[in-house]
Length: 294
Ligand code: 5RP
Image (cartoon, rainbow, N blue to C red):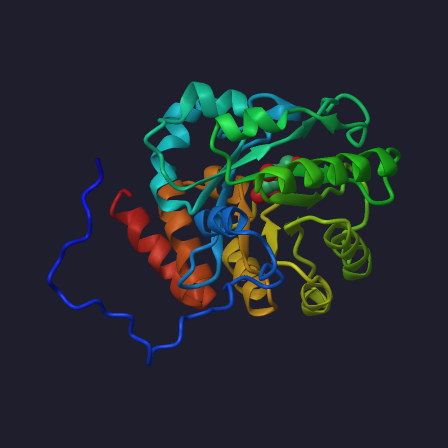
């Protein structure tokens, strides 16, 4: 039998204090349900409103990429410094300790290898698998202007429908394949389409010019991919500019795990993303950590 409430203490209803009704901290996410917002808070830090996602899903189309030959040796030590890991279910199950308790963004599309037409992707995961793996979001490539453009759009919209049914956000990744343009005009088109078709947030590439126009024209948060390995100062400068131009974070892979000092690099990226540190100060921080052997 449950106990009756026989406390002698007077009940307190705080009738003079209106119930708080706070807006959710992420752009475009206010109308989402509680579970969706809770998962997004696992990806984006509610204090800064930003994220450092560590991307190492490259093997899903190009095998053991340089720096990813041994995820257990090279990547697991970086996990404590990431807000979120972006990876395949195969690597998650085999390499990532289940005690890891920040965000997991699962690669949800696949098909072609680097040897064939990259845009010919299909969905490569079921929603019950994403739930079983406690995913914070699912990621799908969209090839605007690519040979299989419509197919990849349908992958996105089906994933959005599945995710919305169970409260799992969808990350729409604007893929450029081997030779699509990467200028602001193209990225504005691609990011806006992906957002309008239902992605909860969007990943794109930084554009040297007019990135602020694509971040403002996109109604949901944008994170940038790192792209090919750059010198550390250049990568930190790109991250800094993207953040100042309205990005809500980075989803960076090669510029972290191919760095001479990956732990130092991810910690320097965090300074830029979460603390608005200048590229120069973040680079000095990187070098100090590197010289200390970190
Ligand atoms: C593959 C991806 C990668 O996760 C993405 O490109 C991030 O990695 P990098 O910073 O190395 O470009 O989405 O299509």
